[in-house]
Length: 191
Image (cartoon, rainbow, N blue to C red; front, side, top):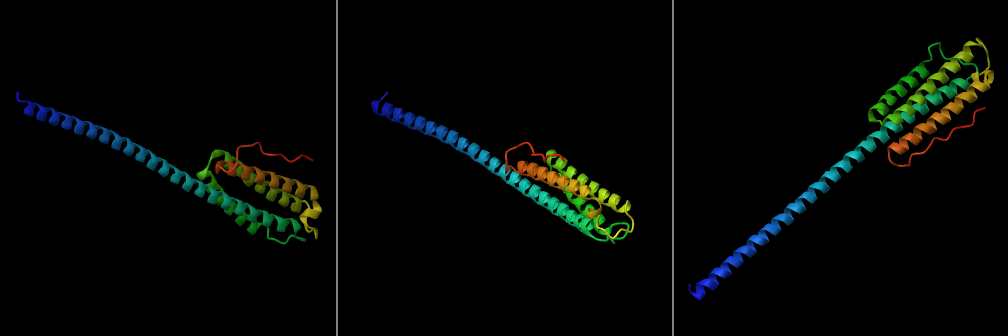
């Protein structure tokens, strides 16, 4: 074989080998970059979904607390009214409890279960306070006094339940939103 042909053949083979090696490395590098970009895109979508879920939860929790506050305001008016002249089926109380129940359903849907459980305690506490208020008034028909004047102990107990259940709900909601580390809810001293 002629040396010129041999040199040309060796040069061609080395060029082809270098091109193949460069192409292989480039393809491997591009594939690696694409996998990394897919991973980043997946993480970004997951973070966006989590952010959207947090916002839905936050809105549900805020609405629930607003409806609980509205029910507390109706109860406060009832406790302090002297005399209590609301008709037998307490319309404002019924509307407040219904709105609270609707807001609680959103809390249950958005979750998590720990927040829904604390929300159930708020709903139950408000229901029990309405019952207690009615019991105080039914025990004293025709009185010119307010319900709080008739049974200050019942009112104080209701306020303790309000404070504790609201505080526990807020703590669970903050934890679910990732705003606070989990902690044991602080309990009020029993009297």
